[in-house]
Image 1 (tube, rainbow, N blue to C red):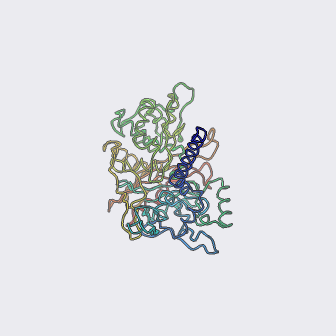
Image 2: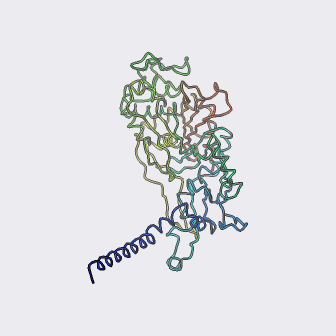
Image 3: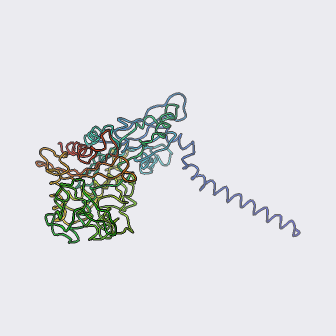
Amino acid sequence: MNKTIRRAAVFSLLLVLALLVRATWVQFYDGQALADNDKNRRKTIARYAYPLGDIIVGGEAVTGSERTGGGSDLKYRRTYKDGSLYSAVTGFTSQVYGSTQLEALYQDVLDGTDSRLSNPVDTLTGKHADPGDVITTIDPAVQKAAAEALGSKKGAAVAIDPRTGKILGMVSSPSYDPSKISGSGAADAKAWQELSADKDVPTLNRALKQALPPGSTFKLVVAAAALENGLYASVDERTDSPNPYLLPGTSTYLKNESVSAPCENASLRTALQYSCNNVFGKIAVDLGQDKIRAMADRFGFDDKKRDVPVRAAESVYPTGMDKAQTALSAIGQFDVTATPLQMAMVSATLANGGEQAAPHMVSEVTNADGDAVRSYPDSDTERVVSESTASQLRSAMETVVAKGTGTNAQISGATVGGKTGTAQHGENNSQTPYAWFTSYAKDDTSGKEVAVAVVVEQSDAARSEVSGNGLAAPVARAMMAAALRD
């Protein structure tokens, strides 16, 4: 064989080997990637070829499946019971628009493709496994109370069991009905277009995904820092707080909402009762931003990976501030932001003696027979502040509700503590302020407890009537009362 033929043969062999390698790569690697691609129609057909498993609230399914009919190759579509009530919990799953929240996180369980659902015989024969269910920690009574109390107001609310971290209620308003976008028909497309065009973004879970200035509710974090760092020995010790307080390095005074409030050199209890800006601005400057940030982080701020199991937006305490900005951060302004979940965690931690239980809203994932394939037990708690600090702040919060700015949260037969907040919105506070309330309640007889945070972004109330006590506290009261009922 001459050299030319030999080289041609070797080259041809290399081409054949390259084709074999490429074919193997496509079949065993790219092929799986293509099969798993969300844009693969076959994957969508397979997902909706069978009824989906369910998301369970209070022992009952709030989801379902129904035959599509009409000769569609997508045989089943998702349905929702009280869809708008539970959309902040379930999210949606759509034949066209994908999945969100629990529907997305537990997609493999709900469509039966999770390997934990198959027995050895099913694996060998390729039989489709029966789907599993997702059991939530949500209390239907708390959820309904929150939705009814929020009504047409734009905002969100979260309720947590302080001892276990179980999320008992989570509502975002305005809401939407996931059933209207679960299919692939013209009506679903129209409903999706309307949702997408809505400036209020009903599909946004405001309880988890939107961090806003928390206003004076953040003063609880600053008060905790003052006690934990020994700046003041108790909530009843007088502070060194001129009124009004001149912001360092500026000619601007930090004033209080009420000119008649006894805020000059007020104790922490009085300062929380009347929400004295001067006291907390001065404390933040005296402590320095690093100590305030350290306390905020212990409560859960600046955590980019807060999963409940849905990933929550980060609540932020800023860095690189001057002293004037540090003072403003102490009243929940400047660049401080928090989600309702985060502010509920603050109250829950204080209610639980200074120990924080990780918040979660799924307790168990089961197979079709109801056997657990994964359980989410209540996690160990983490010490955030001392029992003494927690006890003193609870006492001060109870003063706020008994005779301060949070009287609308009072519940007969229960001990209630809380903190109001009214956060500025827009340049020079040109837009309607945000109304906040964070609180806890303990039944005087049973000892049952709950912590709640509420934010109202917008309502029909006149601007002069916007306050945490007027708008947010009644929502919190309704949720807490529902949670404490036997």
